Length: 271
Image (cartoon, rainbow, N blue to C red; front, side, top):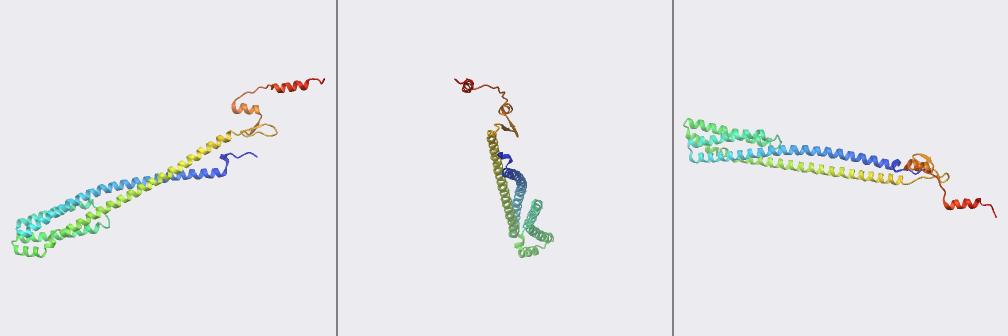
């Protein structure tokens, strides 16, 4: 019965195919996860840039709202027409900066209500300033004062400032979510790379073991116990032919001295 070589073992072939499939699957999974991580990274960088720009515009809007509040307080204190004009101009700056900010804001469910609230607040304030300016141009200063006193809270930018603060907080939360998603994607990519490296390392060790087994098998020579012939590449060869094919050696024949003495002794006639 011929011994089975490792390459011809069914169990070995099953393990080898399984490891090769696992290595390919791990490499493919690592590549796919890395691509997803890269896409997430690019998206996060783009979102970070947009968020930084929106944050800067929000700061400018907040500064303009603060300036408008100061102008309103000056008007409500002095009741001068020039103060009303300054407050209206400051309010126009707020509207302009909000118009610049709107395209930079994300279309998110938590942002839309805040944008709508700021829109409504600015529209209400614009209508109020237009009414006050019309009355002031008509010389109806008592009416201007009465209406401004009654709508003092509306003219002040406290409500607008609160909406802007909530919008800034929403932007900060969005950045935190993007950062968390990016960290999770990088962790998945690292885990996939480690898994792929582990499987590939196991495959490499299996190949080394196979080479060792193959070399070990090559060192074993099968010799027929009856004919003294040697198995080589599926053939049974004489010892001389085996030496020639395996090692390229040519053989010649001689006789051992003790064997020669024995033969000579056998040929001697008995005394």
